[in-house]
Length: 161
Image (cartoon, rainbow, N blue to C red; front, side, top):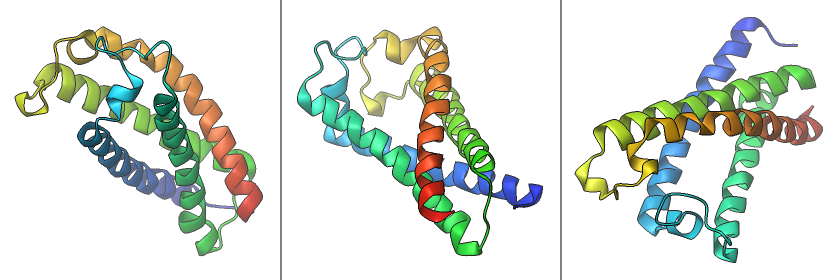
């Protein structure tokens, strides 16, 4: 059992850690040109997706699950806290949803669309110029948040609790 203060401290701390980690992953993806393996010139997912693109996407999903496991270990298990599965899932969903909001509104809309910094050398395609392009991804992102936080929470709960 954990208190409501511990609940919100966990969500807040790991949302910040996740936002920092996600930003680092995006910078690395830009520098290594990993985005080009997954997205075409219009900013859409490549069809057909090359094996290297699938590997990049699988690595990203794996990083999400490892993040949930690490957060449960360092943020709860090491401190002797033992939440129920549904509490852990709710905390992880809120963290993931916070990261979705961070990605959509701060990175995608504020930085890529509105600021559109020259040093990033962004082409003028919908993914870099359209606010609506990013807002319509919120539905998929929310569904993915439910599923990914469920699977990540289940793995962490089975390992530590």
